[in-house]
Each structure stands twice: as structure tokens, then as C-alpha cells.
Length: 324
Image (tube, rainbow, N blue to C red; front, side, top):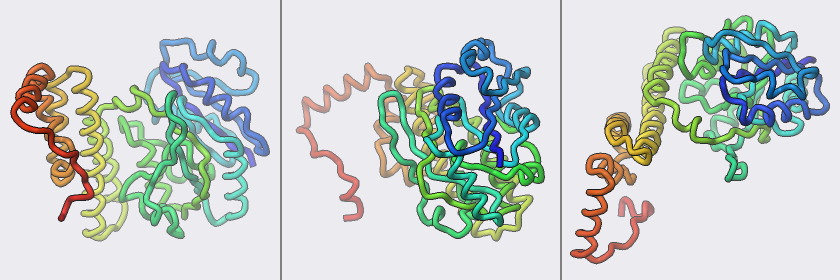
């Protein structure tokens, strides 16, 4: 069965060729590749000139990631559909493995695999979603607790995507989580226990706005609560887990802001992180980070100098000593 691979791109061609090559080098699978240029100001077509005969390139006014994926879906002709971000890459055999898995399990309409993270300076390291969720006979039932699948790790039957409806174009982020949640109400998810996609880590991806992410994810969860009968304890667990993930997002953003010299933003993000997950704050290096954002690097260096002149060095902190 033909698999349609859809890659949206907006003003980012640095890694696009590598993503495209990872698709075009697939063997043992029948596929088409659709690139959707979401109104880029850079010449996407020129960067793909060597591949033009082997892919379809669409262009639209800038309408966002969800709209670009929807445009790709409208142009797709495959009975199976998968997506890839423009800075990530498929591993060899990825398309054939997932197509074969769905062919062998006609009762399933959605298959996903493990993933790994890498960067220009870091070799691939496996992602670590909760193992008990992956090994469930239907992992999709755990999506309320968090989006444990990255874009690029799944293949979906076309008819189920049509039944679920398009990606929600009103969402500024987390539109993939929203789609997976909707699909989980239509089919059981099949887990393929091998790493088949590599997700690139780089500054632009890490600097995404935590406020935008929080607003979108809370909307997705509220929407899922309205559409699914979920008991109150399960809802409470879903909100608690979301708060924990958002706290980490704010904490990472605060450290990035501090290193960039944006002390006001760093302070705001640290405070939000603490409010979302106070217990994590008590067992981390956040107090020092907040002190940095309040005092600034110059005053903090002065305070360190005074402390070291008056007090001997303390042994390093070990989390293993907590609770003793």
C-alpha cells in the first residue's frame, strides 16, 4: 500500500535536504513525498532542485504548521499517511517496517515506534517514554497522561485521518497531540519496538515559547475532557502530569533566558515553573538559578567571592542522600 510522507517547512532549509534524503533512500516500501512550503521567505524550491522529479512541492501563504499538514493531506493519495518535521530524519527501513506492521494487523489503524534524539554534536540517544505505557495492549489509552510520541514515529490509515478530521488550525502548538488523542478514540494503537526516527535537538527547537505551549496544551486537554468520558481521578492525574511537564519546559526556558542575559524573562519563567511543580523546585538547582536571575551575573560573582573567602568548600550535593 502507498504511504504518503508529508513534510511541512517554513523558513528552515538548513536540515531539509537531510530529511528529504532520509525519505527518498527508503527501500522496500511504496511511497510518495509531499513537501508543503508554508509561505517561506527563503527559496525552498531551490534547496530541493536536485530532488524535484522525486517529490511534490506545494506552496501556500503562511498559515501555520497544522494548516501545512492539512494541505499535505489534501494532496496525498496514499492509503497510509505519515509526517516528518523538516529537521528530523527517518532511519533506513522505517516506512517498510510500519507498513508491514499495519498489513499484519488489519484491526489496528495506527502504528508507532521508538525514537531517538540527536544533534550536530551528540550521537542519537533513545527517547524514554514510560515503558508501561508502550507495552500496554493499546498504548493510545495513555495519551491523556502526555504525548509520548514524536512526529515522525507513526503511520496512520488514511480513512481514520479522514474520520478524525483535519489538524486543528486554531492551535499554535500541540496540534499533533490533539490529533493523536482524536485517533485514539477511533482505533487501537500498535507499538513497534524499534527506533525508526531521529529527532534533532537544536536551539530553535528548544527556545519555543513556554507560554504558547502551555496555552495550547491546556486547550488540547480541555477539549479531550469534553469529548471523552474520563473519571475524575484520571483527569486529575492528566492535569498533574501536564503541570510537571510544563514546569520543566519553563525551567529550561528560564535557563536559556538567563544565559541570553534576559533576566526579567528568566525570573518570570522560574516563578511559573515553581508554581506549576513546587516539589521539583525543592529538589533541584532552581534556587541558585533564581538567584542568578534576581542578582545578575556580576553581583552573583561578587557574592560567590565573599562566600568562598569566609566559608570552606562544601561537599557536592547528592540526590541519593535525600530522605536520609
